[in-house]
Image 1 (tube, rainbow, N blue to C red):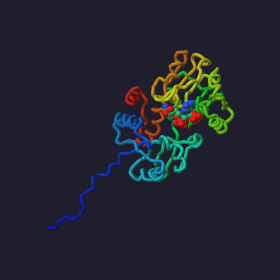
Image 2: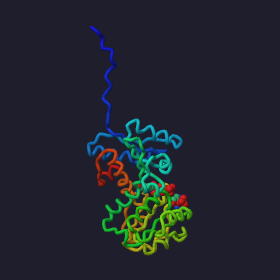
Image 3: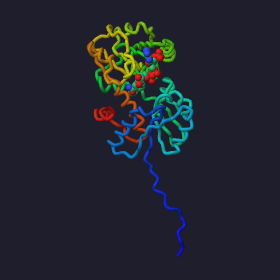
Image 4: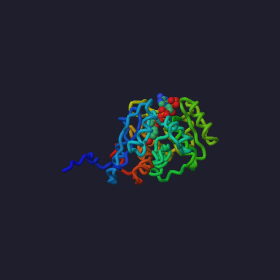
Length: 286
Ligand code: NAP
């Protein structure tokens, strides 16, 4: 009797798509929670994991992940700008914003970089303030960092007639005006309160008001009742800025919905189903 010398059969290869979020540090990210909620809810095969990546390893990791079965990743601090240099294809909006938060590893080996923050920002307002009309009046954006650039791009695309912006470091607001065009009007930081006069949409796009950081100190006396006021900060959910705006009769929308909505396009590309942003998801992430 001859002995079969062939190796033991390998366990079947799992074709469940893998995705994740890269950042440094990454433990704080809520993305695994929300993608995990969707995977479970829709009964989809797939995994989404946090991946700590040091800046010096970014390029190598991005070339290795597709070989390991990853179909894409979300990108967070500090890699959002650097991934644009590594990606093979960069969408126009990611290039305009200067940062990407969603990468797709294509079957042809190319890395496709997109920015869905602006989409998430608008989808949050549309869902939670269905009567909001961006073209009804000027929008005022406080802050000029990476998230503010996505907000500015999406508000202009949505048809705001004028986009006012102020930032502690004025140079960053001036850069936004230079890149985004004539509808952008820059206000001095000391004039932030005046910028709100007659605005119908007001956004805090700074990190001020976040748990552990000082509150945003912009006088809100010029806010008109009925103005749509939103904050990108979502810890706490209701910032002092939103509470004061609400007490002045404004319609307020918190920033958590933006986080939830910006994740949807990536999930659809990686796992094949457009996910819903609803109260169950909010509760899971909270
Ligand atoms: P960033 O690029 O670091 O920009 C930070 C912004 O905050 C800048 O405008 C900065 O002004 C301003 N700022 C920081 N400390 C300040 C202070 N002490 N006084 C006045 N201004 C100050 O950060 P980012 O990526 O744009 O994120 C901004 C915030 O949005 C963060 O809280 C982030 O968590 C949040 N965010 C939320 C979502 C969401 O889905 N809800 C998505 C993206 C970001 P200078 O330019 O003068 O430093």
